[in-house]
Structure formats: structure tokens, C-alpha cells
Length: 336
Image 1 (cartoon, helix red, strand yellow):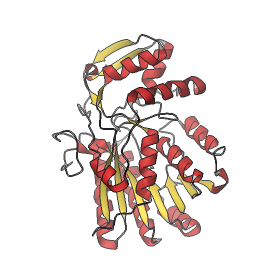
Image 2 (tube, rainbow, N blue to C red):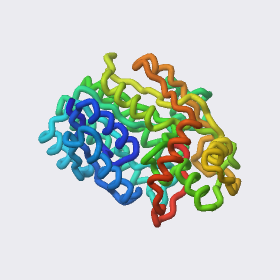
Image 3 (tube, rainbow, N blue to C red):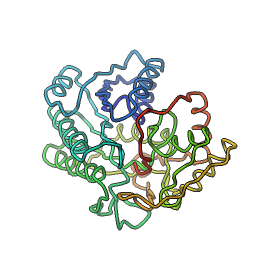
């Protein structure tokens, strides 16, 4: 297939593209390489993709998905058959981020992707949502049938808005869409602003680790290999209902407290952490917990990499790829 992947320099996209190329697909990447994240890391991911199996079938276009004219021209020229939409303004507390920046990328940008996918008669749009849409008051484990109408931060609200936009396009135009609610994704090539790599590098450098919620918050940590496998399996199975729309959780289904998460890192690094318990920050959920029954029913797959196995691999990868963190400070993001 010809698959257009937005946010192609990103963490999850890196692993999804690797799988698509390995099985023989042609991948058209789109990324604006904007500066809110670690641009050096984004470029390193793209460089690494040049070395993987099938790299000759990958092209990356530097473009902004909010630019309707540029995106329309790209769709006309490349004629993708399916779309994996992973571009987003990420994180619940990114330093210096404005509410407008989240709305621009996550709502306006996604609207343009849906509009061009409809115009190009794309066979299936798979897009990234987030476990954070469940917000307050959702009984665990979280099921897709929950209302998800009490978001706790602007990021979560924009992700829920994206789900509603997708439903509208599926209803009005018959565009098949699948929204994947990712639960705290971690692994090699991950975001340095998120807890797993920040904790690991703090251990390596002997710095204190701020544990918000005093370390009692629980997250359903899900390994990126499982996430990439889920994305590809869902991509191959467009929804067939009326409308052709669905939401699926992608999570391991085993919440782990931040204290226990650090303890696993301590064991794999042989290092004692310096812990700095702090109160929970506004916009944070106390716990996330995925019910991935629907994903397994639809695809025959359920995330299976344990935190112990996943962190062992992350520690090994970080040792090989260790480099200084970005100059600008970032708050720890544990939600997406």
C-alpha cells in the first residue's frame, strides 16, 4: 500500500514506519520539524529510518498539516491509499505551550487531514488519540464506551475534539476512521520529556527524580513495539459499520505506580534513585488503566510487553544512544 504518515519524525511514527517498510509498503512521511520538541532527536529518527529495510520506499516531506493548500497538493501528488495520522502538539504541560498551539495542531491540523483524506477517497484513516480523554470520573479499567466528556487539560480536550471530528467525517462521507487511545507509550527513540527517559537519565546522572503525586499515581505503561503492531493491524482492518468509525484502546492493561516504575529502573541500572516526592500537578489523572478487549476482538492482538521486559530494552538502548538532554527545560509528562 501507499501509506501517508503524519508526524513522521516522531516517536511512535518511527516504529510504525519501520514496520510498514519492512513488509513492503511505500510510506509518504509528513513532518514540519517544529521546535517545541527535540528537533535533533527528530532528525536522528529520520536518519535512522534511512538505514532500515525498505528505506528506498520512504520519502519525508517537510510540511505543516495546518496548511490546507500544501497538504492538498501533497495528497494530489502522492495519492496515498491509507493514512496514519500521528502529528500532534503533545504533552499536557509542555513548556511555553499556549492553548492555541494545541488547537492549531490537534484540531485544525486533523481537520485538514480528514478533509484531504475524504477528497482523495482514502480507504482508511487511523489516528492517534490518547488515554487522557477519559479525564475525571471514568471507572477503571477504561472502556471505549465510557463518556470521556470531562477532560482535565487542553491537550485532552483537543484529542477528544479530534475523535468527534472523525465521527462526523465517517457519518457524512463514509470515510473509514479508527481512533487509537494510546496509554503512556515508552521505548527506544522515545520522547525525552516523558517520564521513562527522564527518570532513566536522572538515575544515570545522579539527579533527583521528581515524583508527582508522591509517586502514587499509576500509569498503564505500554511499549512502543506493541503500539506499532496495533497501529499496523488496525490499518489493515478498516471499520465496516454505519458509520465506519471506531475507537480502540491500546494499552497493556496493567497499571504501575511511578514508585514501582522507578524501582524497576533501579534494578536494571543497578543505581539507587534520589526521590523527590511532590504533589500532583493540575491536569494530571490519578491513574490510567486500559481495557483492550475491543482491540483484541478487532485485530486478534493485545499488548504483551511487560514493564520489566520493556525497561530492560530501554536501558540497553539508552546506554547505546546516550546524549545530552535538550537545552530547554521540560516538565515531566506522564499522561500520553
